[in-house]
Length: 274
Ligand code: PMP
Image 1: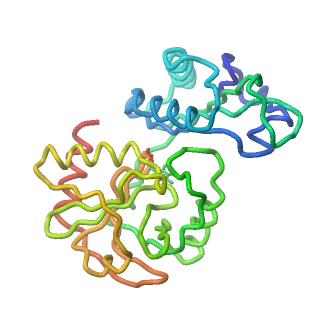
Image 2: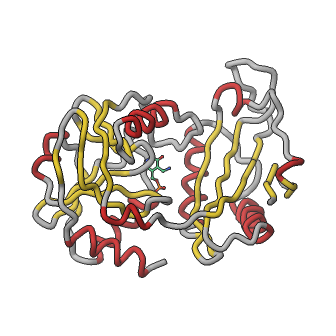
């Protein structure tokens, strides 16, 4: 098994991170996870352009061009002969003595690894989700490696026998701890707009496009969590969970939601375009 550090592909055992990497001190970095289906990276260009946008928002220089990154990532996938799995990669603000103040001269560090991974069939019937306050910062649109609000929410969900946490800010539903949230009411799709309060998921963007192509209206507006009680259907989206139905909400509100035709249709369309 090989990993990538900057431009070197090395055996995992030989790869080391410098103790002074700002990613390690401050969580000062960004990342992406891309799905590999039958040896092909899915939506690679969309992920790379989101990485570029995260980098820009954080005044963090990418160490290589998008084209160079593509070549490096594809060579790692090939080296590890990944058929179905994921590639994780991150860029940190590089190695410097610990200091909040960053220099613009520090060279960013690129690291990447692959994981063998297949869709979890158990999720297809739906999952339980835990409704909890969104305690994250106000730049959730940036895909940073700083994920404390997300990991605490995920743990809380698991401690309450739920597969995912869905979060709300002052009663307005934002997103999942590692996914975006959609509701269906009267055959219309509802989701939080792509503001600073959510990550604009690549799966989210693809699902919205599939829905529009199918003649399903999509309304991107903030809505309070009470509407969960009136939803016809609900699902979450992410690179690893694809389109996963929600069948039960627990926590600050308890309700059951059936698996319905819009979710099924979108899931079929999603699978068909892979
Ligand atoms: N929101 C958050 C907070 C996430 O961490 C993720 C997945 N990393 C998503 C949404 C879904 O994004 P994507 O569809 O690009 O995987």
